[in-house]
Image (cartoon, rainbow, N blue to C red; front, top):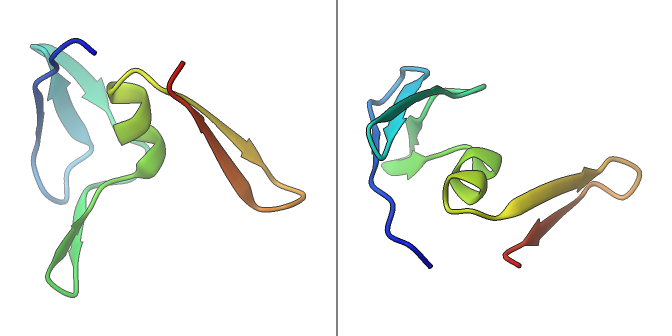
Length: 64
């Protein structure tokens, strides 16, 4: 897997991946002392494909 640099700022929708600006659908937050990053964003930023099956409330992550 190739190296990726991901930079984000809490409570903002802007992130940078390998010097390329991107926008999140939900901001990164701290909840109960833990940093919460949207799962789809993180998986896709790392090169995975994400699918959501609404009928079963299931997330499929394919790393290829």
